Amino acid sequence: MKRILCALLACAICTSVAIGFSSCGCSDKNGGAQTPGYVVEATEPDLKDGDFGYFIVNSNELMLTSYTGKDKDIKIPETYNNYKVTIIGKSVFNGADITSVEMPDSITTVQDYAFSSCNGLTSVKFSKNIKTFGNSVFFNCRNLKEVDIPASVKNLGSRTFSATGITSVTIPKSDSLTSIGEFVFYQCQDLKEVTIPSNITSIKESAFSDCPNKITIKAAKGSYPENYAKTNGFNFEEIKQ
Image (cartoon, rainbow, N blue to C red):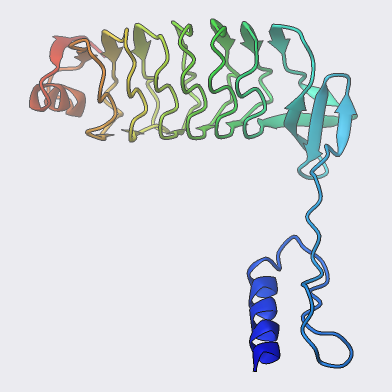
């Protein structure tokens, strides 16, 4: 009975991790249970270019997956080996001792935690074609005081700029971006004003939660951002758009 239960358990484990692993090995030649045969191996970049490592996304694109250098001023390459660098992967610079970042205009996506807890980060130049920020991209970058969000952006992930040092921010005027999601500016200790265009038609209640200053929302009269400001106790300043 124990042998049967072990065999069933081993098969169940193999089924749950089948994607990305090889050869299950649920039983030996005599039908007895044995340890599943999958192997977890450390991920290595497909390509390396000095201090940068890349994953090949397709025949044209690369994802930046690692940085091993010591430079504090980072300029991310636009191309390598006839590929375009289009994605900054998860946690690439998480906790790194860097001061500034310059992204090429080939970048369209920045994934979760890419620059989180970079306490020395003070300057970021975004790609003009960036579309998506993942979750917590700049979380806890305490010395990041200014950000210029490009009009190309379609999505701001949860906690994108949470716990940063930004004092004011302008949400871009664009039909592609219509909402400010959960905790995007959570715990921004120095945030005092936010300019929000009329294309924003949804703002989560937690978007500016736990910010100690009474924030002034600058927006067009009669717009959704004005209603949000007055409903949630923010200061409101009318601007023409």
